[in-house]
Each structure stands twice: as structure tokens, then as C-alpha cells.
Image (cartoon, one colour):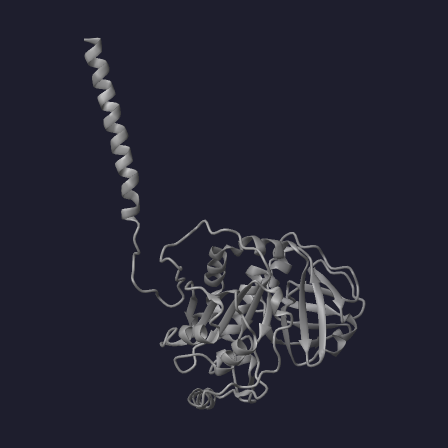
Length: 362
């Protein structure tokens, strides 16, 4: 009887082991693409399958981009409501900034020597003419020491179901052979159209990934989380964390005057940093400060009070304005310190009109 029971138990164990093996073998059959097409703003993995265990990438990164906002002469009557993509920061410019923020790479704006019109119809007419003529618009400059970069993120808008011809000028003048290239694109209803094919032909020696980020132009300003998630999935989260831990600097530019502030690690400084880049009006206040109003209120939790004199970047919570001091000031229980000027502090008093505030990339 014992012998029969033992044989029975052995048979049960063999059956269970066989069943487990069959289950493991069937798992790959259950892994399949959910859809055959990707919506705009989606990530298109190279193998069609999402990989949450992407290896951490290393090597120097270049974030090169072409933006209409960086290549147009603004007419006086252009406003942010009727022409949002030409008012700095433009759609692609914003996307590039967020990629740079996540990778810690170097930004390079592709700019033509002869700017485009800020009128969209006129800009499109010229772009169409350049496309018909296979023109290569002249650029203001090329990337210095391109050999130092292993990876290039290349951003562009869809113009006439392709790319701005200046992008092809860039690719023909800057050899990306052997480099890993990731594309990101802002577009209308035409989607990526023929842009990937044009880029692949112009940069035939580059390793251009099929993993492309694209979004509709009206969604670009709200795509920060989406594009940074894409970059993180490519393996650049560690680089972003290193960038976050390094000293953070922002540049305030007014005409030829540039002031660089180094931010502290307070929540208020974090809130300001996350809103950049900003194009905003600066105002005079009293005889010792310039002020501007950020898009959103800053979080003053655990933020130190300002007491360091001239060169201080601060936030006055009751009014919601950021203050740049160029002379001594009185302490105030509602005045919080964001950082200190490390370059151009003597120019704060000369800031006027529209200023541009952006992250200083290393």
C-alpha cells in the first residue's frame, strides 16, 4: 500500500512540474502589440514592446533642435494667443528644453541667417518654396566639437509634410555617423509624414532609432511629463538625477544684458525652476529692485527668508512676485530667498521691458 501511495505522489509531482513548464512557455505567446498604430504624443518603441527596464545610458548628449520661435523676426502685432508657436519659447524649443533637463545634455538651436516671417502663412510660403527648390538655408553656425557627443536628440516641426530645409542643412554640415539619434517632433494633423525618411536619407551614417516622440502642436506646451517619461524609458533617468543634484543656475536676459543666478534647494526655487523657460515683463519697484510675476505661485514651505543684500533673488509671497535686488534691502517675514547672482549682478538695475528667463545648461 505504501508503495502505491509513493508512486501516486511521484506521478502528481511530475504532472505539476509539466504543467508549470507549459505555463512558462505560453507567456511569450500572450505578449503582443495592443495596437498597430500610435497616437500623436505616444512613444513608439523600436521593437513595439514597452521596456520598463531600459539600461542606464552613458556618454555625452547633444539636444539639437529647429524651432520657428528661434528663427523668426517678431512683428509688433504678434501675440501669444493667435501665434503661440512663434512666441518664445516655441513648441519645439520647449520640448528640447525638457529633453535637456532630463538628459543633462547640451542644447543647440539650429538657426538660419535669414529669419522667417512671424506670420504663419508667409512662413509656410517660404518653407514651401525652399522645399520645391531643394534649398539648403544658410545657418548661423554649427556644433563645436561634435565628436564629443555619443547621442543626439534631434527636434523639429513638421513643415509641409516633411522638415524645415534648414534641418537638412544641419545634417549635411554636421556628420552624425555612428551616433545614436533619437527624434522628437511637433506637428499638426500630418503627423510625422515624410520627415523620418528625409532625416534618415540626410544622416545615412547615423543610428536613427524607431523610438520617436511626437505630439500635436497644440499639446506641446503640456507635454513635459510625456516627453521626459519617453527620455527616461530610453535610459536617461540617472543622468537627470545627477543634473538635479548639481547646482542649478538660471539666466535672466534683457537685450545684451544677462544676469545668472544660482538657485538654492528650497521648494520655492524648485517651483520657479519648473516653470522655465519664461518670457515675461520686468518692472521697476522702489529704488533697489526689479520684479516679475511668474506664471504660478511658488511653494514657500521650508524656504529660508531673504537676508543676503544686493544680488539676492527672492520671492515676496503676499504679491506673488519674484524680486531681483540690486541694492540693500530690509528683511521681511514674507520675503523668501531663491538664490544669489553669480554673474552680471551689477546689471540687474539695467533690466527692462521683456526679459527671457531660462535654465543655464552646463
